Image 1 (tube, rainbow, N blue to C red):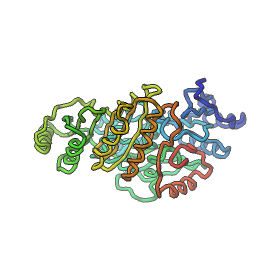
Image 2: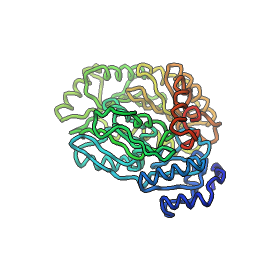
Image 3: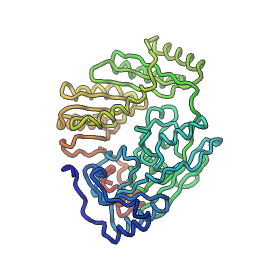
Image 4: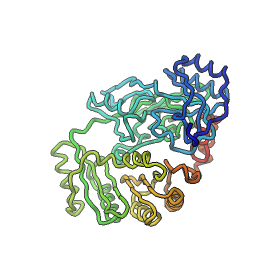
Length: 431
């Protein structure tokens, strides 16, 4: 076993393990291996229920036994958040992977939480539709995991975030209740909106078992245009001008790599005639700057940062920040000053002011830079969440300042999960 992996205390008794096997059959209750560790903490068992009812029964049993449960989908973002206070049981949604209903005429789809985003998009594409979302690692990432981490990408400029796309959900609560909220129609507003509450809660309130989304038509054609800017101030000015214009763009972003000239990307989705007209308007708006066609892979820039950080060994860190769009240039300049010659850095910032930064350098230097960067971002009423930090750096709180919302968040957590069964300690403020 890896020396960095520590096992939780033995809290799963033989009788409890037999009860778990009776619910999901012995084949789908496994002893955890080092590969199942969560932020260095090794659970005892992994359970893979095949139905919502089985999952709810397993969760109730774990709650009654005082176990700490770690929900898991595709495992692509399992390291996000704080290290768990404990980890006794991983509850996997891998077998809850069906697309239950695609009401293509109503532009909705109902899907189980363990279905991957890639599988869902392939199904929707057969009817010329899509979930207007560009999540990280779509071939492995599951619907439940993407919702729990609120992983929205650059398409949110036009289509909104996950909280705008989800219209209903079913959650398994720690007491075994299967609670549903929303419905299958886009304008359903009755009841308490559990689906939006669970989105971004990192699985700390309930375990998502299924979701209902609004979907959108696939574009006829797409075109990505990219231009070089003199500096981040000019790049910000261009992005803000595009946002304030009547251009029907689907995404825009700024890419920076250290002291190199920043690049601005703009995505259009339309017919050929529409693309030509929109491109001409963009060039006119930008003072006829030199825009060039770029490959569709340009929009993988955020994923490239995360993927390279995963494979970068013990000298890489990655974080997500959120600021006002008008603060993009100042924020990137501050980051450059903090890193100076000590740390290599890359940034991808969406037009909404949501950005990702990858650092490479000496671990303690990166930690110091991230702490100072967080202070700067929070002084602008923004936020910074650390998604990866080298193990050799000191432990750093992942989420930062919770503000006035933290007491309310604690109250909601206590209401839905009074025994702190789900993902204990992993969310903001140790929730």
